[in-house]
Image (tube, rainbow, N blue to C red):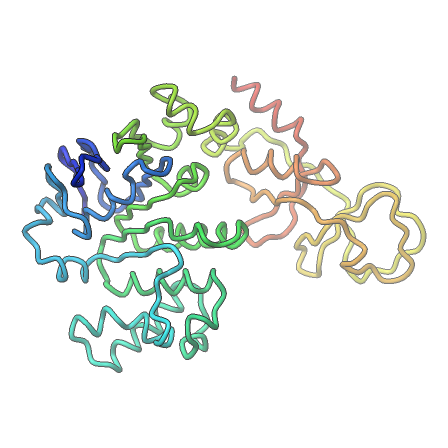
Length: 359
């Protein structure tokens, strides 16, 4: 179900223009990210889709139909909506929070709760959390509940207004991964608002860069926006390191993965180690590095290790390979397969040579 903005303007009493003549099309089954500084109209644009904000002029079309032809409460019940801090009802259990929309749509209580339980599983939450209240969950868990509640509308359209900005970076990355996993299965039409260009680039099939005053500065694929900013504003907003971000769209073919000496946790050692050694568990998953100046007497434990930096999953973009090499204390980026097992290492020099060779 596609979304189209046709010359949409929102002007408030007093003359403030939040959105100025916005025209763009959000394609069916894709993620479009509105990104820009504070006051650029990205949230206002999102809220005009479900009529939480009414445009002053222009038209917003949902599946080819003017949204003003739909009764607002009915329209909203058919559109998933996720906001920052989840916006959960504090006095209702997690299960009842997720069951809210099905109940409003006339489902019986048992059927709605059964559907809610399925959705908790879909977003990666254990069933036992359904009995808890929002205050008993972590921030990341609350955001997952918010996504589950939005999915309960069973609509092809999902609106997400800075949903992950209130959680720490590690949790945020996990939530982004979860959204991409869900999208690969469900194929929703998603409009996502963020002020973070890295989040926009990671999630978006298309990115709409907005400038202060509510005007659309550039609309295109993340690669287009990073590599070919249309003006100084876009170039400045996406950052001077946009070339590095652009590596997110370059495959790593040609980067040779080399063997690495590993040692298993629990293995008996005596005396100095010598060179850097990569420690793995009994499944072959990396757990950290044993430094050359380490002296271990007895069984190797996690406490003997130095944190290993990021991991590069074989077959993904070259940016991950470079980051793994640069963040590794040994200078060797750890490469893993789809199951998280070590397959070898790469160096920053190897990756840069491939990048320069494609120059």
